[in-house]
Amino acid sequence: MQPGLSFEQAPPISVPFRFFLTAPLFGMAAGLLLLWQGPAALASRWTGVALALTHLIAVGFMLQAMCGAMMQMLPVAAGANIWQPQRVTHLTHAGLTIGTLLLLAGFLSEQALFFRIAVPFMTVSLGAFALIVLVALFRTPAKGPTIIALRIAVFGLIVTISLGATLASAFGWQLALPLTEITHVHAAWGLGGWSLLLVAGVGYLVVPMFQLTPPYPQWFTRSFSVALFFLLAAWSITWLPLQRPDALQVALGSAAALLAVVFAVVTLRLQMQRRRKVTEPTLLFWRLAMACLVAAAAGVILQQLKPGEGEDYAGTPFLLGVLLMVGVFMPVISGMLYKIMPFLNWLHLQKIGKPGLVVPNMRQMIPEARMMMQFRLHLAALALLLAAVPLPLLVYPGALALIASCAWLEWNLVEATRNYARFSRELEERLAQEQVEPSPRPPSLGRG
Amino acid sequence: MSGITSVMQDHHKLCDEDFAVAEEAAHKGDWAACAATYGKFRAELLAHFGVEEDTLFPAFEERTGMTGGPTQVMRHEHAQMRDLIGQMDAAMEQKNADGFGGAAETLLVMMQQHNMKEENILYPMIDQAIGQDGELSSRMAAGLAV
Image 1: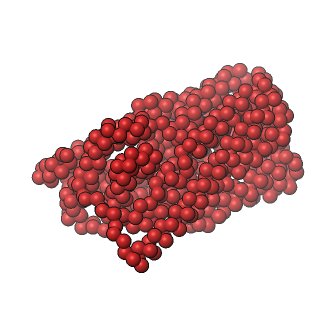
Image 2: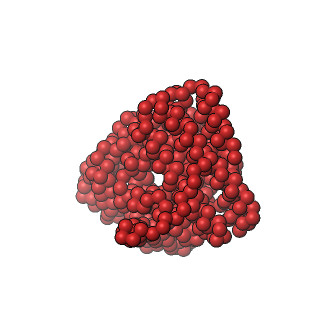
Image 3: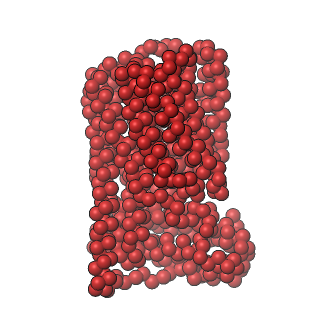
């Protein structure tokens, strides 16, 4: 059988769901930490608290959900089969969950021991995940811009993990390393090389699919991921002399940020040309994310053009961090989860049923009104956290709104999981009943 | 692409177009408009399945001997989509906007990933296996005309 034609290679529903159900919990933890620390969290990007917050969202929320989505998507959408999916799932999920907790403990307590445990633990678990996924992506017979973007993205993840492990080793064993420089490169690969390219690669498939937009133009999909990769790589090399940013570095960094703007603008334009006129939560989440991506990229460019200015003030990094993580990636992920989980529910329920036995549809898994409510909460969290830069006291309501948004997301995802269990029970009961006393089946549809 | 399946790809687009109009009408509660466009979409979709199952797939299976492969998966997905059409019919009859929207949303995702597999994998295989066949083309065109 041709790869990619069947969903038979899809993993059991519990594989992606455990990642999806864990992610919002770390988002809530980030909100709680922010609430506890208040304006102190904005003091500097280099405090333990700021680093703990960053990793609660970047690893605890984002990477957690992204790995779950990869496990589900690769066999189905990319024809790439993952070696030992069950074992890889256990290892990756543990690596992400325990790893996030170790980083949190390390950053908050500043105890070397936590980093000494985190380094081997996270390198092995996440590194194995990345390598196995990369091998799968190179072995798939499928072609196209999505596969290329995903390969580069996973390579970006490997760079991020390696540099992260280097930094954590420096904390764990007091190594004298250029921490600032490595951190810049680590963050750029994590957010740009991995996260943004993953969103782009997946976007090439799902943006046209969910909203009935025209496809992404070929000139764009052919060049975007490769160009971003080379710009990031060249930019990273300019950090090697460990000097203050020079003109070449600024040019390369700004060019990479401009590329991100092009992606956002192309996506927004396609969505404006959509044939599907119904406005639904996933579309709103994507639009919000693309608007924030434009703003964040503009911020990155401005920051580069004025190097050194306000270097110790955390306002700008906090603003960029909020825009990118709370504004771009958390919304895209929420919007995607609201499609992936209901569709997976429906698809797996189909296997229990048989033709003519009505399986509940996607909207019966998570009510749309509740997705919209979470969108509003998230929007409030984003607005308040951005406003907290000039008005630090707003960090308190901002943190509360972030907790509420993540709690609401978790509630919606738990509801989808419970509905899956309930509907499968009901379907099995109905099937059993029909076997005892065959009831007239609803008229089947004639063909053509 | 100018293979024998290009007409099928164009027809996917036509179905998408009418799906979007019908979905919007139901969303607005304009059931009269919905009945008209949904009826058109429904007829087009079922005609599309019919042409594939009765004309195109058998021709491909006959030339390649591949009967249990990709065409079987596509037939199975057609059955799943017919079930969703059944749900939409029922919701339409009861003027149930939620039920219609939910089934429509599910059908859309199912339909799009199905089309993607056909357009990226199966249709190129069919084009390669069959090449040009005027008689088959005209039978397909006749089947799609509703």
